[in-house]
Amino acid sequence: ILNVEQSPQSLHVQEGDSTNFTCSFPSSNFYALHWYRWETAKSPEALFVMTLNGDEKKKGRISATLNTKEGYSYLYIKGSQPEDSATYLCAFGAGGTSYGKLTFGQGTILTVHP
Amino acid sequence: SAVISQKPSRDICQRGTSLTIQCQVDSQVTMMFWYRQQPGQSLTLIATANQGSEATYESGFVIDKFPISRPNLTFSTLTVSNMSPEDSSIYLCSIQDRRGYTFGSGTRLTVV
Image (tube, rainbow over all chains, first blue to last red; front, side, top):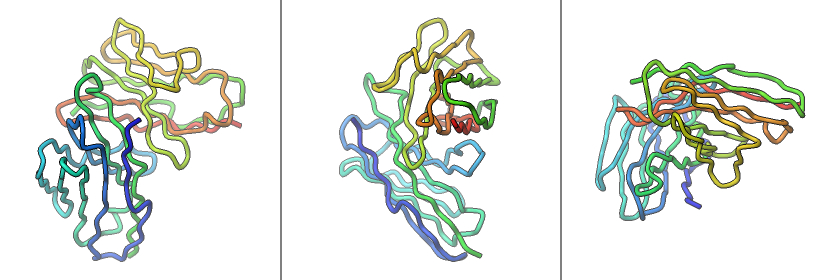
């Protein structure tokens, strides 16, 4: 059973604060690490797909880093806005016979207060 | 990326009954995935559905409880059979595309 863990479980920040979350995953049989943003009653929205150790990706105020050797990824949000409030999910994509299947963390619930 | 239409978006069902969830994709895809998120838990893969063959179920999930149909390359259904309150969850379908994975908007099921 693969273990993908996210921390913290929930986070409350003030508008304008910068914040970050952690995703830890198995360091073996790694294929890709996905980050999603999920708002209630909507589809999870893909933020990043990361495949290479040392990858850094950026999309507006959101960025992510990847360390496959030690099995962790960080997601950063700079200058949080109320519309950033959502659940942020990471998902581990394994290779080999498990290719195509994602194992998700429990998510980090972010609330940004005006 | 592809667009997935999933319905119903929510339902409240009596225990012992069954609910069928549908996902329609606007393009042809080989594999479709069905996930469940129970309250306070992670999104968990139920099964992988390929067109023209039986779905492959993950450990802890069986075909009698979660029968899946995949009649063509754009459509799939998941049935939650003989429901109990423990089946109250969000159910999501997903496909793999150029951006990684695209999800339906989910079905929020409450079993009473």
